Amino acid sequence: MAVEYEGLVDKLIERIIPAHFGINVDESARQNILSVSQIYSKSKPGRSKDWVEDSEKKDIQSTLEIRAASEKFLSKSYFELKKHSIDE
Image 1 (cartoon, rainbow, N blue to C red):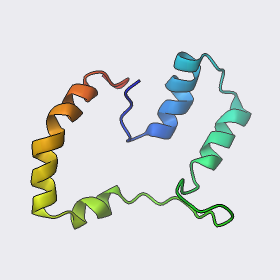
Image 2: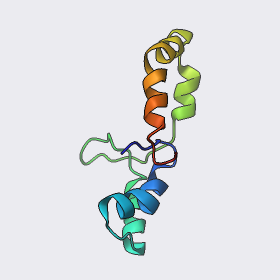
Image 3: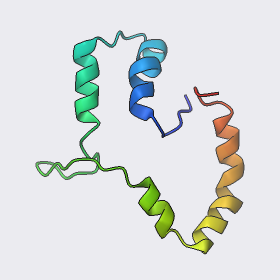
Image 4: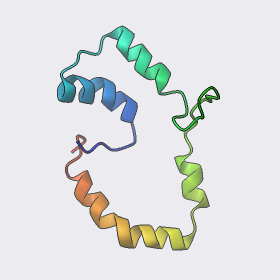
């Protein structure tokens, strides 16, 4: 299933888990998902840290070369995948 990154947690709760996996997301499960989503997924065991949105920062820091390479090598497959996203 193709899923756009933006709004991922809400999509998990509202659509992916119930519709794709057939699992009811009650309030307890919803709170657990929201809680887990606040932890940085690449933290080392025992050293968890809060997740902070950094997409805009990474976008600003990217070079013209990185942007050009992304456009050249990734844009076609990205837009093809986006056609099959649950958002479409």
